[in-house]
Image 1: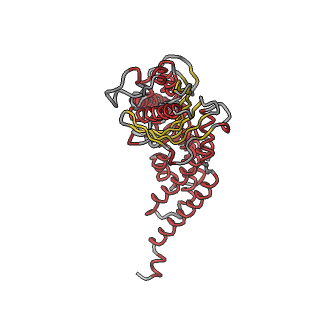
Image 2: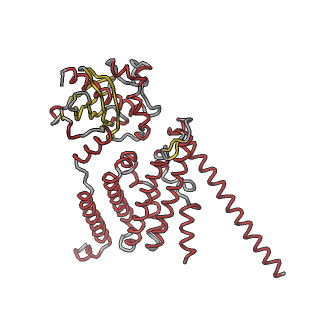
Image 3: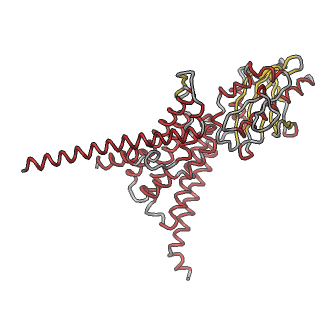
Length: 215
Length: 210
């Protein structure tokens, strides 16, 4: 049972990372990573919407007829995004202004609808909650990594804290976002591929070792 | 199809489920809308805290209704002066200005803190972005960028009756008046228009001896 949730969490965070492995939610990824603070804000917003939408959709999965499931999911997701929008406008107006158009666009973020359709509609509430949290955390992590790189290289600061006076403004612009995104995907896939290969080799050696002992 | 058959059909179930979901979501939103409502007064207070260090209750409001709002044009973009406040000494001016001509014809609303002495605008002290309409690159206009308007480099533009612009939008600009974020030229135009409008308003009203 513990392994089941661990596997769901690892899938969302690493092996099926929505940003670096599945290349989903590219629009906010490129737009909201010009600095780490905004990237973190967008990530946390997506965690909130994704976890709650997964829980609600999973709880209602047996009541919603399959023919109208997509409009039903969209209504639930749109409601959660509107709630988030009202909350941010009231309590975090700076983040609300910084997110601008990309806040309402969370409604059509394919990560959220994708997880609702692919996971929450087929699994229990607890599994869906873990999936929402881990996928959201994977998305947030990816955004923060890109935000830190772009902010540091582009303006010499991290989370608004000035580290150096030198900066290459190109990296805070859309072209820089594409380049950083591509490089991050390459590094992430390279590292994960090597880790998985090492795991496979270890398993094979263990298997061969067991066979040799039997012989 | 008889009514009884329809009530047992999948179509009816679909309609009921969608209606119930829509109604519940609508009720939750209506409740939260009241709970998290941000009044105009609250919005105003938030902006004033950012733009003005002094006591806001001592400011005189010069624009009390929409009829008092004025429009200025500079470099093919307009600015609507939404609100203007002046301190008791007559030297500190706070102007809320909405610049048009942004990305996808959107707007940017800013607050500008200015100083006028002897009936003439002498300096811009601070500029903040209040709100925007559909400007996807508004993040690029951070405090460092907005401090450009109040920098020593552009002091002559402000006190000499000049305006800010960007070369990509007009051939009239000169390096002395160019303030632009590369890659966000339309939003830059809207912000420049708003700043220009705010300056024109203070030049006009301070000149009248307000």
